[in-house]
Length: 41
Image (cartoon, rainbow, N blue to C red; front, side, top):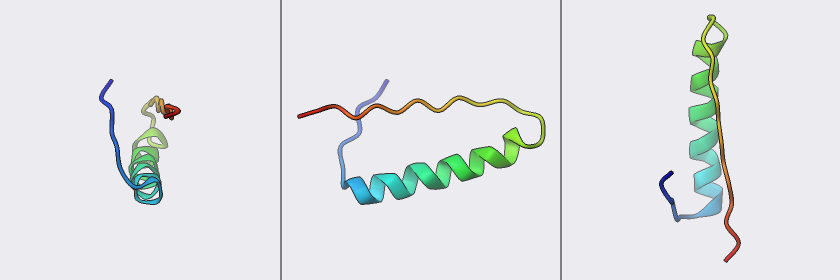
């Protein structure tokens, strides 16, 4: 899994946008998995 560093607010916006787009396909019969982890430090 790749590590991504950046502004937490902007990263949240990006993840939310991708999640909403993915839901469009899941609702039409697809499946999906989203895994996020925040490292301390």
